[in-house]
Length: 180
Image (cartoon, rainbow, N blue to C red; front, top):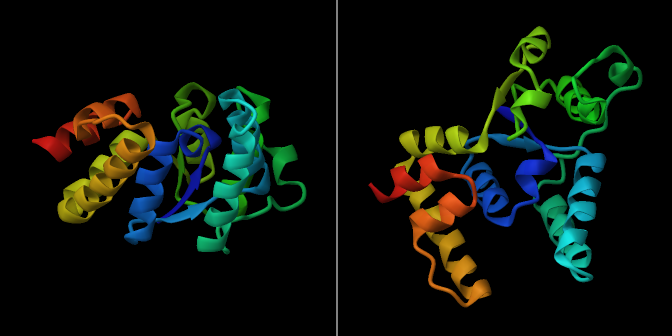
């Protein structure tokens, strides 16, 4: 399955690490555009002066790990597409150009299923997508989650529980599945 990752699911660290961990396990092929990655870097400015610098370093590592994930929309594709928020058309154009199966986003209202289905695409939220991967690969997804948890605890100096971390990361169903 080829999945375009919207900026809103790769900017938050825990969500991104869970999604990319699932991709590393072979559950899907991640796709993004240069613009999606640039939006990630700009969004990281909210974290302070070092936020963008750190994001750009993480982007470089991500591009190194998935050198074929970045796709540019074919000329003219964006002009023929429509979404409620015109600022998101580039995401849809990337998905159409890459012949993706799904757009992973938390912005349901900006990606109506009816419009996506006309292009042969699905919209999935990261929580349900990851929970589905857990159902087919519980040990692998648990391993990924435990690595993300260990890194979150190391970086924060706190002692998160897996369920609390997933809930904070807007992955509550996955957190419940992992700790059931």
